[in-house]
Image (cartoon, rainbow, N blue to C red):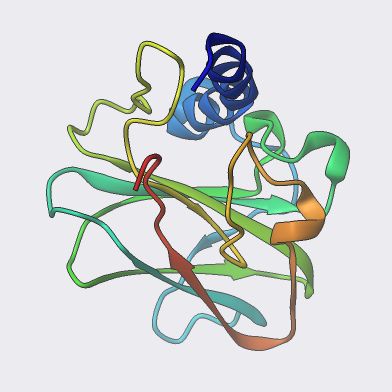
Length: 169
């Protein structure tokens, strides 16, 4: 691989790293529609039941953020609707988010191996920890756009399955 391609690849991943840092808690929570973890008997009309597979260990937690259907602010931590950090369970980690309104949403997550609250990257700025998005797009040169990861949430339970990805296999 020539140096130019390697540099382009690393530069393209900087937005992913920046997003994951905001997901890790470096940006304030959104003032948008409040969401919360699902509770038994919860009257919230819309539930996102998220299943995450592909974690390589039970160390750390999986941090999950939900975003509205807003291309301009997708992956900007200031605009996330909700965030949860959950202990990893293998083979699948489950999370549930409750919302008041149906609509289009997007899921973004990462595996925080050491509970540092920070997404690790390599010296080139490439992901060093697992990450994933709703609709499971394959990523090569940076993060996906909102159109590739959004989904329509209807009243009731909406199942979202995310296969964690690892840069370089």
